[in-house]
Amino acid sequence: MARRRSGGITIKSRRDLNMMIEAGQIVAHAKANMIKAAEPGIETRELDAIAEKTIRKLGAVPSFKGYNPGMSMPYAFPATICASLNEEIVHGIPGRRRLKDGDILSVDVGAIYGGVHGDSAFTVGIGEISKECQQLMDATSESLDIGIARVRAGGRIGDISNAIQRHAESLGYYLVKQYVGHGIGYAMHEEPQIPNYGKVGNGALIRKGMGLAIEPMLNIGTSDTKVLEDGWTVSTADGSLSAHFEDTVIVTDEGPVVTTRLA
Ligand code: MG
Ligand code: MG
Image (cartoon, rainbow, N blue to C red):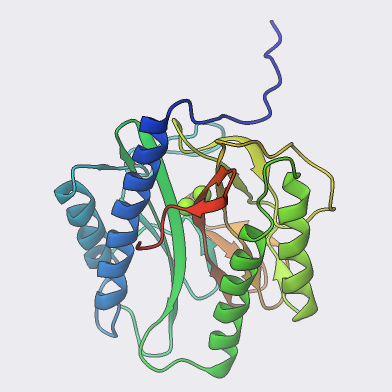
């Protein structure tokens, strides 16, 4: 039986749109609390505990904990956040690793509230970081902003992808191609895929009411990735540094509404 091809989910009601904003704000609070705590000496599992506590206190449930996409993953994701250090790109598992001065940590966090999801990521410098790290982080967050600025009902996903690609590559960085952004709403991962590279006018149609999780991942040395022995953590193939920023955005007639930044 063939599955009907979908152009992406659309949020069905005003109530659910408002819930998307609520879910996003809960994620934004979790991010703010982690950023305050991200100092040399803290373990990544402590940041995970801060995020889980914030999300549950605000009446939501972590999206990632127990998430099992099936396919090749050996077990469900065991934590509220993904904590990916330095050359790690995404899906790092928080644990006893202690952050040191000069590290950069990419944190990904999601929550479900009222039946809908928010998903967001950021990279934070720990203590004093190098100029190289700061430039990589700035380029990645700028790429996200530039991608979000291309979100327009009636446009194409490729418009977003292309803007991200052009900015990152103009600064000499490599984009991760194996992992992509995604539609989001009633499920965390929905159609359409949102690659961080592409052509203007290509890809799925962007429609009013769609939720989009846009998430550029920029590397210093290569686009190639590898999965570590734990089966989850994705690292750059060459060990070069990586940064990741992500926001959840709703497409409206008035333009993109970013749910996962503090209002
Ligand atoms: Mg995410
Ligand atoms: Mg995501």
